[in-house]
Image (cartoon, rainbow, N blue to C red; front, side):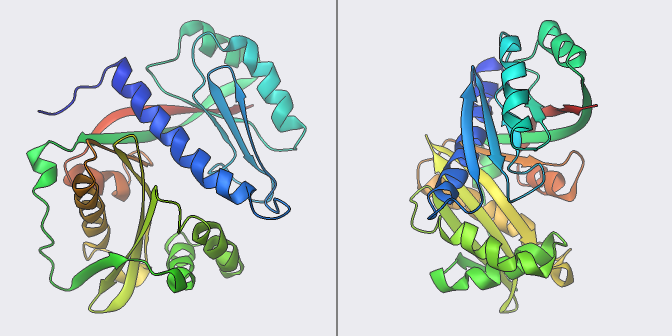
Length: 272
């Protein structure tokens, strides 16, 4: 039977997302000298993540803010201002309140965007009936010496500058021997075509990252990677799969085709 979304499940989904980012950034922070300038700090229920030398919202964001955390907001703003990093709050509908939203608005923030969180129970037959039907696609675990290939696919898949490749390779390779993390390489007719990443904790598998080379899009690469990671998680006794995607995106559609449902859309709040 599929799980229905209630506040308890929503909290479990949000915690899994916080755990995934915390694990990644903690390993980055351990690199000698902390060259990326990673810092993670708790404020009430909220976790504030900063990576000064990797600009953008992926690693510089606040997760877990809840009703009752109004007194923490000024502290969070000061934390980011000291680092000259814009403040970004990710709010789930299960844990907000009129008081919290009003306080954010009065402090100078506004609702700027949405982001989708998806989930599925791994007892759902629609999910567990995985079979790789496309014979041209093969998927294997990434080898340690394949992180240059990983970074190449990642940068081209997300249209990122080529000079970022070495940093992306390093920041992912540090996770290779962490038991929670698994990296997958998808090939199409024996040519590297896509990558997918899983993070497993507390019987939850998080679909942590995925990318496909532009030349191999619309061939089922991402759908195959989603289903493969889900199947591998079932073999490890996971009972829940979680993923995030831009609302209405191809990634969201692929997760839905794999049997995942929308749990909620997060509200993204930024400073005016």
